Length: 238
Figure 1 (cartoon, helix red, strand yellow):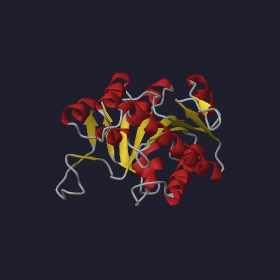
Figure 2 (cartoon, one colour):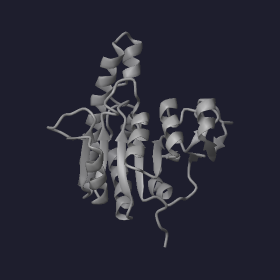
Figure 3 (cartoon, rainbow, N blue to C red):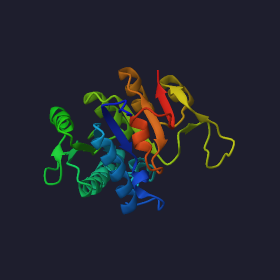
């Protein structure tokens, strides 16, 4: 019988992943597919924490580029991640899972405040924990939030869910000759600027030796393949 390779994981969902084919907003069918896959993994005995982005609703960097104060734009992005977290919570609960949303920006009416020990306790009880509002600080991406939370809760791996099936040496959507990497070192990601995650997040993963699996979320069953150690996507590590 196949056993999970990882006991506790952080699943990083970009806002774009939640938008489905439309590229903006929230696509209910996409949420449902993610929820079904997550349920399979949780029932397999894996503790799952989720970090959501907000790019399907608002990007702080884009707002800043158009003249908006960067900190204000980033706080708006944090609120967008809370919207996505609540949508993801609803989809997971529809599948019968127990879910808790913890926000780095306090908003008690809709989410718990982020408390590390409480988050770990939820995971130990089999609940899915969704971390919203990034790190709670402007100038830090949700990739950095995923790396930080993974270190704090002692997750064994970060699963980077994308719309492509791994990391390539160039954009496979525009270059049919692009080559996919099966394995990469943290230093390769940093030196080559491969776009797996920003440099702050990659450095944090490197310092804490947290492996990253970059894989295609659009293919059903890929989350299970990742947690059982099957060769999928691109593995970033030592």
